[in-house]
Length: 85
Image 1 (cartoon, helix red, strand yellow):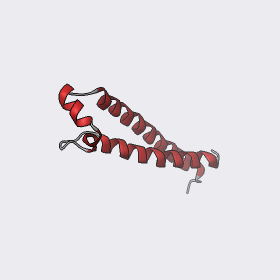
Image 2 (cartoon, helix red, strand yellow):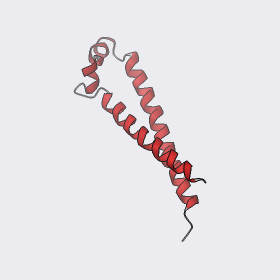
Image 3 (spheres, helix red, strand yellow):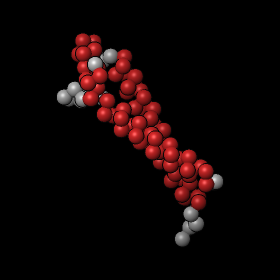
Image 4 (cartoon, helix red, strand yellow):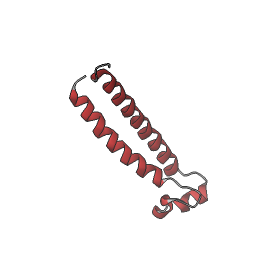
């Protein structure tokens, strides 16, 4: 595989790691979490699970899948790029 594949996967891995960290911090935890700072606590306490919270869950899962695919892609690239000892 070409070298640009590895660089693309590394950049994508770093970006998805940062976005995934941010999305996880935005989730509502036991104590309200950081999502309550942006007004998510009021709507979720009135309606149970708001649309914003469901979308946040979907985005987190999607970014997590892309993050996992980057890990697997880099592993496969390393296995094919490095000679067997």
